[in-house]
Image (tube, rainbow, N blue to C red; front, top):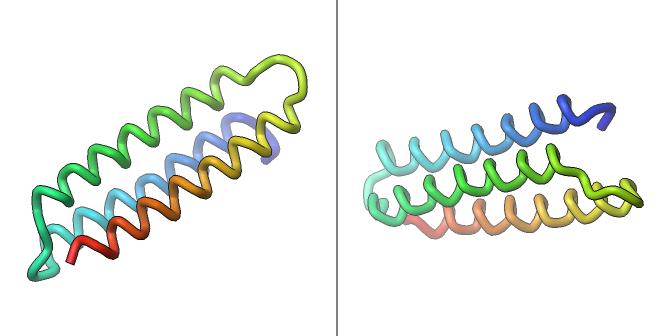
Length: 89
């Protein structure tokens, strides 16, 4: 990423897409557990807050390692959320 601003936009876009997918699944897919969907939407918003906050407070020292770990952690969280959305039915 070229800047923190662009990285924050990227994170917000991905989180927005996940939130929308979860909401659509909750509202329009029959047989979806609405309570689990609501909990998952809350987790998605918490994840967004956590990762945007991490971008804002970059650790001093080796920025390359910081962003590498950030990318790995974000990827793991995204995969977990996607699997949870798939399990709502």
